[in-house]
Image 1 (cartoon, rainbow, N blue to C red):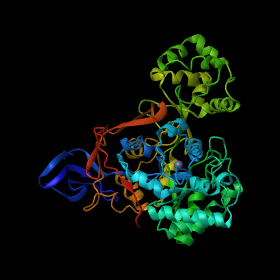
Image 2: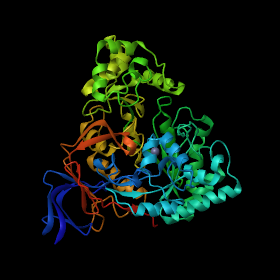
Image 3: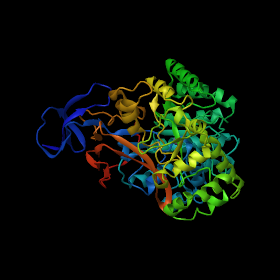
Image 4: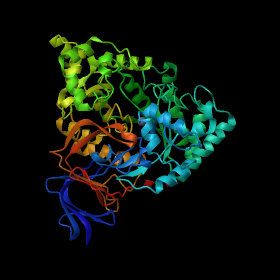
Length: 577
Ligand SMILES: [Zn+2]
């Protein structure tokens, strides 16, 4: 007798093997049998015409704060994600000294655009060391399993205080302390260590995060500590993510990461994105990485699977902020604001003004957004993240004679004032997905940039798994698509294996019953939407999907027909290797 049998589904087991049709039987949260016409069950899920795949393992999220107050882990979980790895990019909340909490909030707010007020109100704190943080998380329950990594930023702040930022090198004693705490964190269950080396990752005050300029002696000591503690991952947001990064530093990133991976046996993961300003550099980065792998070092590119879509809308940041006629309406409830914005005299007043209110930083930010409008695209209810270049605001302006500001203004008034514009800031230099496609042809590159929980006011790419199963296997018209089994493998066993999670990521007997039952033909990714459901009424962007009939974590149904069931089987994962 099974607890649950999922019957007659198209089973894609996550290994890349061809789909089969059959039943999956579950007992005690584990997959107990796979076959045809399995016996009786307490609960039966009819999967006729549906596809049964492992739960998705998302290795790049920023739920470090959210996981202390929230159990749903949106925006990732509505997209079939059953395991999240957080603590990426060198930012997080442990270790922390009493009284230093605000510094870490400022880091997270600056790097990942998670509202400081939400973190202030939402976070429970009460820990100091990384192992204490894990104990706090241990008592929590979520809609997905949660794995951690120790971030360089909080670690360096803990050890070096105000000396942790800028070019200050760590002393021998400080390096020893950093390494000791890292080893402690990993021994307690962190899966690895993460660091950011791009000057694009700054605190709210614009200062690059602690660790950005760390020298080799420090980085290598930390890597040895991860190895000695039994950890496996050293994640790097490398210099070069931003076009403004120092070219001399960018040039030697692959070198130290490769040497570090070779010496320690750790897996060095590094973010790869296509830059507008140097659209071929990702090839050199991935080639260097492949060369290190040929020499036996585990160096793994993390790729995005879609462009980084910075969003604009009246409720988000947009180019008309800090213009007097707009600011006069800003306090109004959304619907009234939109009614006012639709009046011709208001429109022409706002369009004729320049940003003149707010701080200098505010005005620059608004002017910057106006400057990128030519590269923006209006998103439909079912958004197209690979839009044709002749639909950019710049191309439309040329074709129609209207200005990009006029086009943006009118577009944002669509959908009752909720239509969004998207600026594909990375991975869209050639205005198509050809570079992304090529990146995903590298058998070792891992999908790892969905950024769930981060960039609340500007980006929502946590829907990446749904994008893989809609655009990449079914809808893409502008180039080759991916094979379904391969797309599923990349979302499941491939990411799970990177983190050594051998108990999930495949549909196989004995493994955890982390499973999605999906209506692949009907699967739809809807447009991003603004929600004010963070603590303190904080804003974030969410994105819905329809077509996930069942999502199951450890045999428990967490989502049914695209709705949260309220079940919270998710637990803290500790690396026990
Ligand atoms: Zn990140």
